[in-house]
Image (cartoon, rainbow, N blue to C red; front, top):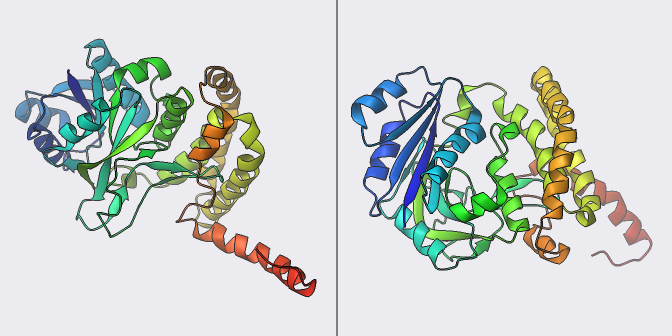
Length: 344
């Protein structure tokens, strides 16, 4: 059994050494692979001088998370590794992180990916214990901001896994394919989780595999980055993966949510960013529809299974949508009271 850990890096000189030191301390043997996305902050020089045990795959430009990670995944698959883990350069892991991920993976040959317990860098709150996908077409991290770090301690099946700290089975990647590089960053891991699930590769949580994450350390350096990627990518996840029978449920809700996100971006002075994102998303829609045909033809699960994966409510953090929903329901409640009907 051989394992590689791929770490994408873009100008992460301040965070990268702690990440790699934590990988050096792992109780399981691994090959460390750093894909450098055109850094200009001295990251490459630091790696060459201080980490000769790291396989460095230097790229001339920033390929984004999806593109950079794919470089590392292709290299690992070519090398014949049976399992490949991804780890953000702004994360550090407990010494048994990889050992725990592998233990859960090898216990069930059906499992295609295993998520770790992602905790904030200060150790006070959960960042993620896997990914969820709601009926609103909105993915969200399972357990985010929960201060009870022991609240998700069962090795349960989950919808998906965050690309920031996850172990993938090489056989699953060869069957399903790698990350969609059109996404660049954000929700490419949700897209991969969808494709794996549709092909019959479930995801599972390894609750004792613990990683600590400095949220937004990379994306926070670029103004408007989150807005752009969210408006560009969310529709693609649905277009490619949601089965036809569920589109009438998901599509109108996602349209409403995206419209609100667009409006808020305009009010924050990010109108140009928002318009550009929508134009890119629309421009690549024909490609996503072609990909959809391939994905849906190849799925091995029925609609009932897909429905069981979804969260049938708004994500916990959707404050604006919850307010809008409450406001829309108020007139209905009044009419039902006046008509003497029971409100459910």
